[in-house]
Amino acid sequence: MPKPELAITPAISIHPNQLTTYALANWHPYKPARHENSLNNLTRNKHDGTLSKNAVKKLSRSTDYLLYLAQDKEVSLHHKAKAWKFKVAFITLTLSSKQQHSDKELKALFLNHFITQAKQKWNVSRFVWRAEKQANGNLHFHILVDVFIPWYELRDVWNNIQNKLGYVDRYRANMKQWHNEGFRIRENLAQFWPVHKQKKAYESGKKNDFRSPNSTDIHSVRFVKDIRAYIKKYMSKKEKELPIEGRIWGCSYDIASPEGARSDIDSLIASELGRLRNAPGVHAFEGDYFTCIEVTPDLLLKFECYLLHDLWLTYIKKFDSS
Image (cartoon, rainbow, N blue to C red; front, side, top):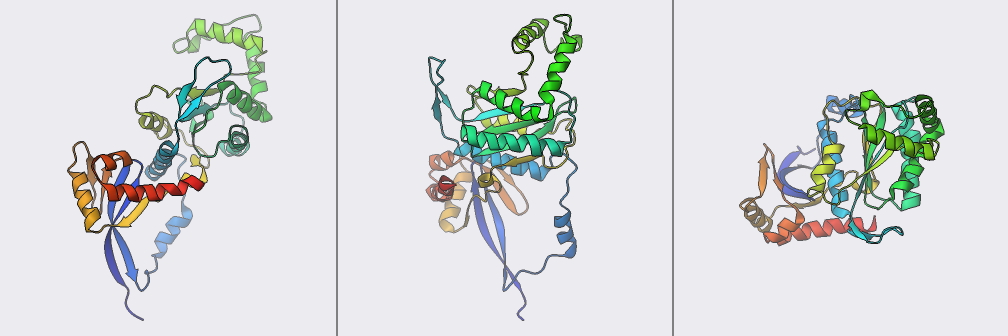
């Protein structure tokens, strides 16, 4: 049997906000077996309940693809006089009372149900979600989608889902007990929740007998200049991160592990890469075996990297049918 030989080929991968050059290893006639320890590491594949560096990288990449693929849309509501431009919705779902069930149960019964409802009711097909613990220990979810969802529909759907396990009923009972003699101030929250806003929330809650808690939020990104940075701040933050049972994040299948546009580097592509590295405002990070260049497809066109741009266009068209 011939001895395996290693051939190194310079290669490139292109993603929405990054281009990477690296050394591609090819073994001939076959690839040597991996060491037993490496296989054991793969089978263990456990985490400590918080986002690892690798998980942050994957989550960020899926988020980048959703933001790139999202199309500008015009939205209008029957009670609004004007229409407005819309691209993505970044929403947060919280529990209305103290968490009584495990993180895994809530993801299985609440999050999965919500995603199913979102697909059916609002035609959501592409999404990224992140589970996180609040300071009080309650699990909540950040979800990025590329469709418009009216806030009142979102709240009704989520409250119906979480009340499968009585979270809205317990909220209602708590509110009625707290305000049993009329409006009562929550002094421990006054620093962050002014009294006049507490009073307003109380009056609003009374109208529906405290059956519609404010358990959802749609973050306004219409006037955010750097939407990518804004969303990643929420999706990838690790400060004072509390551990979570089971999966911490997920996304729709088509953006779960995007490989990016890939190619070997020939002399023509090498020429464009040289021009790109010398372009003003383009930042690059050099590793031992790779180079990452922060660049978007639009900048590839701006700097006349037409071969690289064509590689990207050919790859991204695959998402049209997904």
